[in-house]
Length: 156
Image (cartoon, rainbow, N blue to C red):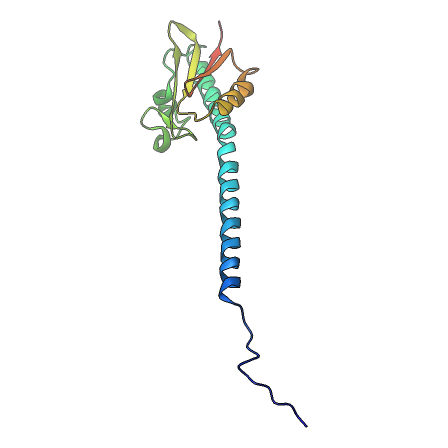
C-alpha cells in the first residue's frame, strides 16, 4: 500500500530568517571588499605622483637643454608650447595630480640652473614620507610639508 504525502507538510524552501541572514552576510562582505579596494587605490597615489613628478623632471631637463642649461624660461606653459606636455591636461599652466591638487614647475628663484616642481593636496603624512623617500636619492632637495611636495633639481 502506498503512503500518500501531504503536500503542505513537505514544503521546501528557505525561511525568512535564513534569507535575511544571507543578505546580511553578503552586505558585510561587500562593505569589506569595497573598503579594501578603496584603501588599495589610495595607496597607489604616491606611486602615481612620483611617476608624474619624474616625468616633469625629465621634461624640464629637456627644456633646459634647449636653453643651454638654463631653466629661466621653463615652466609648464613652456613645456606645453614645446609639445612636451599635452595642452588638454596641462593647458592651464598646472596639472592635476592624483590627490586632485595642482602641479607647478618653475625655475628656482634667483637660480636659472635649478628648477622646482611642487604638488599640492597630499592627504597624509605617510604618503609625504613615501614621496620623500622616493626622491631623496634623485633630487637636489625634497620636502613635503603641509601637504605640498617640493622637489628641487638642477645644478648649483
